[in-house]
Image (tube, rainbow, N blue to C red):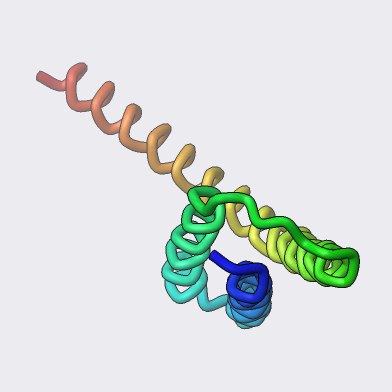
Length: 109
């Protein structure tokens, strides 16, 4: 992988996290999950790539792109964490209700 290819991969990741942020803002949770899987693939590719030496300008570009990615990630988390908490509460209520039904059914038998 050349330095240009590596920077392009980071830029693609930045664009993808921007799209993920848009999906989170619009509450498109299924689309967000699909985008997250794509994002994981790109991150995996970057992790597997042999490190490439960067000149000072390229290094600054990479740092700026990573900061944009991290900013998008923080905003996505801020939007998704309340939704995850809500889902956890619903699952907990469903489990509690199921236990009540099971306990009541066991007593009647």
